[in-house]
Amino acid sequence: GESVGLHLPTLSVQEGDNSIINCAYSNSASDYFIWYKQESGKGPQFIIDIRSNMDKRQGQRVTVLLNKTVKHLSLQIAATQPGDSAVYFCAEPPQSHNTDKLIFGTGTRLQVFP
Amino acid sequence: NAGVTQTPKFRVLKTGQSMTLLCAQDMNHEYMYWYRQDPGMGLRLIHYSVGEGTTAKGEVPDGYNVSRLKKQNFLLGLESAAPSQTSVYFCASSYRGTSTNEQFFGPGTRLTVL
Image 1 (cartoon, rainbow over the protein chains, first blue to last red):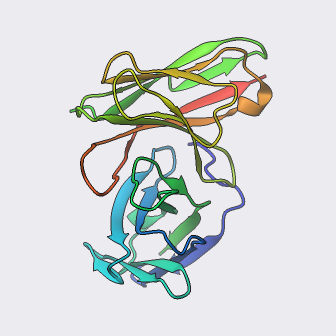
Image 2: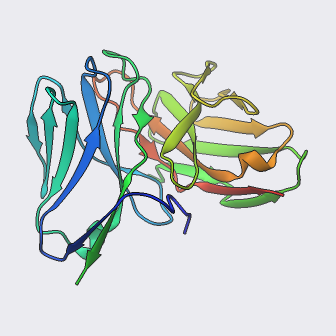
Image 3: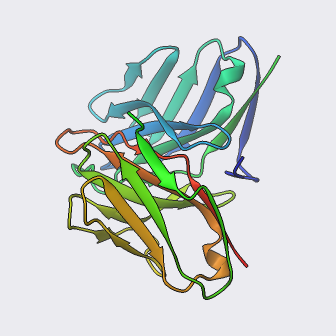
């Protein structure tokens, strides 16, 4: 598959444990954030999003937490499975109130071992 | 539905050659995007389109041109390929008219310029 990031930060977790992937952003006016998952050899896939008027949003086995005070976003994956192994990206629009475009972070590689 | 498809999947060019990458989507999305992805980096937006007949520059537009003659197709052209354009290229599309931006990605095209 494609080399999506030879020098990415890597998080290694044991199957069944919870995973926490972090993302920092710089624009305090940012009002919308998205998490994407990219498996080896594939395009990114939407996981979950959150607006700035929320500090937590839950999906199936995933939770996104937003801390606007320190401009920090995290993605929590419960009971991590081998199929969760991928590179995870956070993304945000470059301008507030305009979701025409997204700016992606550099990504974090999640490795799940048995 | 096929979703977002990209043609070709792989291509090797010599410096100075030209080529066109084709992206097609069958979801009737208004917005379409071209990104490039390099090792250790996230996705960087090259060009995008918010509707048929319209295009706009992204973060890294130099050396590329695009056209959106039909709503379902978005073409990315390299007029004179350079080794710096060796990358994996992803096309994406999204629906207009929502306050979010869930982009649907194609499988990618790996381009090598010698």
